[in-house]
Image (cartoon, rainbow, N blue to C red; front, top):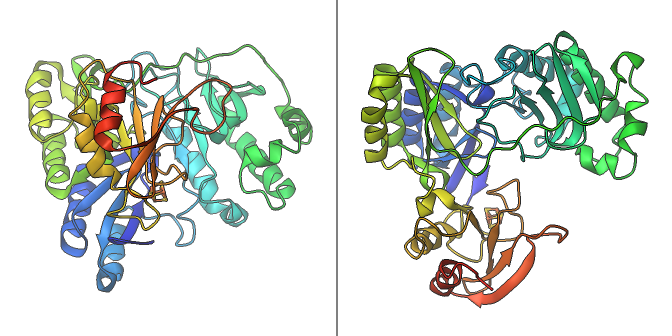
Length: 410
Ligand code: SF4
């Protein structure tokens, strides 16, 4: 995709998994053929920014050689199955979702009809992990129930939303296939499930499914973790821990990715998992090494403390990378962070325009850029659409920092 700072190449990662060899390959192509800036997305994928036009073919070929492509050349866009970065490692999970996620990814890629789905159409698969982004809205979601033999499912939402039914785990692929085929049959001009359900109630939609999938079970609610759980986490595997780190403003340099690949090889199992919080999970670290590894990650410039102001900040590409942006949101976020201490607002999102690319959810506070590089400040409020209540208009970034640092930006 073209952008102001060169081409952007989005690399979709199955379940957010990036092996150390793949991480080295990404770092190498980004250094050789692009600007060296990598972006981590809120769907646990990555983007290589600043791709030089003459290098596009070589860059894509080297990524394919590293095993980072789809099963079929025209099936890249549909690879949207989201799982917890801690899948298969979380000690409290009901189900290791990775095998099912693999089957769902194969289904999406192998059925030619599913290439008509929007590139944003996504399936969320929750194994009951503590490390999960449950408020990320998707078109279809499934969430494992205790015991792991059944999954609750719903549409156009997330595992804290309305449960429409329960399916046996070994029937989940068939259910998703039936839901996808039905969606495509009924969608018309609509590209996302929520648009269709605005016209056709969910129960009416489900009533058209084969009867095997029509057992409603209300009342299930999966607990939502609070904030981004950066730091060290216990693992199901004895003697091992996983470290969850944030990438400041969702970006990594190639040197950082290269160093993470080395760390995964020397201290872990050679695996990195990208997270929906625009960061990295390093699993399988010996518990005795956790402090040393955390120090190395911190020295690399990664964020392991959720109280760090930059760990609570989101910013889109801004005017340096996007022609639509009215402000340099990344640079302004860095400056804003200097105003905020460890007890500042839960999360601030700097948007260059109302498209809100950097977040799938509404953040507690949003700074929306206005012509001239100033910002309007909003606070999320239940019942209010859009970014929430407008608290102040036309602030420069220092004034915005003073408002937010005051604790009560009203
Ligand atoms: S939110 Fe707007 S300005 Fe920011 S990257 Fe997206 S389209 Fe560009």
